[in-house]
Amino acid sequence: MTLLCFVAGLHAQAPASAPTTDERLAALEAYINNADPGKSLTGVAGPGHNGWMMTSAALVLFMTLPGLALFYGGLVRRKNVLSVLGQCLGIAGLVTILWWAFGYSLVFGKSFGNSFLGGSEYFFLKGVTSAPNTDYAYWVSQNVFSMYQLMFAIITPALIIGAIAERMKFTTILAFVAVWMFVVYFPLAHMVWGITGFMNGVWNPSATIKAIDFAGGTVVHMSSGWSALVLCLILGPRLGFGKEKMAPHSMVLCMVGTGMLWVGWYGFNAGSAVAADGIAANAFTTTTIAAAVAAFVWGMIELMFRKHASILGFCSGAVAGLVVITPAAGFVTINGAVIIGILAAVVPYIFVTKVKAKFGYDDALDTFGVHAVGGTLGALVTGFLATSEVNGNLNTNLKAIVGSSLWLEQLKAIGLTLVISIVATILIAYALKAIIGLRPVPEVERQGLDINEHGEEGYVD
Amino acid sequence: MKLIIAIIKPFKLEEVKTALSEVGVEGMTVTEVKGFGRQKGHTEIYRGSEYTVDFLPKVKIELVVSDELTGKVIEAVTRSAKTGKIGDGKIFVVPVEDAIRIRTEERGASAV
Image (cartoon, rainbow over all chains, first blue to last red; front, side, top):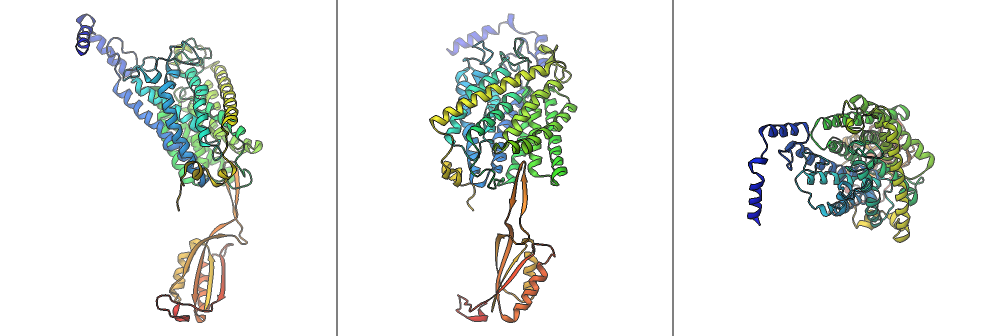
């Protein structure tokens, strides 16, 4: 067998098919320009692009473990801090297994020839090697690409737990996430990012909805945020909500988590270029500007109207800024990012302080107010601010609508994301309610989820 | 002998301890406590949620002194713990029947 391969290898390198010096030079230039290497250098990853994508994958995992875990963990009461960490850890493991078995293939495969779901060719990551999948990147190993995208699949359902914190059974959360990934996340991610996707305006010339979403405004933040709202409504408020003090048990942990989210978000947004190129550089810059502006503006709004700029205010502003810039990061200018930063502070601020108080739903840690509202806002604003000056890929399939009617396509994408997230969550939640129940018994909720669901305490004096 | 219970603002503890040492007090018991008086609590706001915190952190100092020292101790605590603002605390004076040093079994004033 080895001998056969060797002979075949020799044959493949026969003088007739050897690349010329010009072709080899062109391939190296293609590496610098993140373009098609042509005949030479096919099937190999480019070290710089690959290096950045491995770094980005680690950064996005860092957003969940421990960034989001601490951000949310600090905001719950001390009797429930471990439940949040446990939910993040449980989701990280569960989603990785789903991703390996089916998820990656359903999102980024194309064997179904379907615009709503990918294919079966990569089930169990079969054939996902260090060679690039040129549907998505010429210079990034497909195994690295699949791990990078896995980290998005992990953080998305983990965002939901903010709305339902302190009052849902651990086993039911895992069951909900397992079904939700197949019904909401995998189809949506394929529609937006899959090469045959229904809403992949940038790369799929036959996309029905010609929308753009750089790093996941619809797929990640809208899907999780709107599902979170629906789930928290079906679940009902925490026992004692509105009567008892439910203040964060540690604003210190919350701030530490926020800093990790901000740092990790560079992998999320700049990594979404799937290359270490100029588009990544632009996304890195706009991410910084939007987060900083939103954090500052939120703090200043509080200072003006409440006389105190709170730590939670700065943290909320930073996260909101990062959420809203997510779909736009690789498509908008620096000035666009400033506008986004201001909007990201003002609009979610109104939702988490005024709208939530008016309607009285118990979105415990404001997943809806920050992620659903921010993601929806970002998706829409991206339609107005995206420009091909920043990202030449917008000229490939969208030249006619960028700067004019792109926002209408964005509205359609928003609508479809809303419908899928809301309808699926209602169905899954009521089914699970009937089969295994959503909430722990009241005594367990009163005493805390940590001791009862995980057999541990977060703080032993 | 008198038991003197002083409830003070936590950040005043070091000053009070120094003042008590200066008048000759050789020991005391300190506890972190919570409570409220006329100062009442305060309000905390986390995004849209507002909470009233009724119990404020205070420090409770307990010490037993001879009758002669009582006046000086009260004066020392009052002087060192006072800020003039609401919430400075209170001092209670309670008569003590007896005191025993466990190691030597001494009794009365020489035991404190």
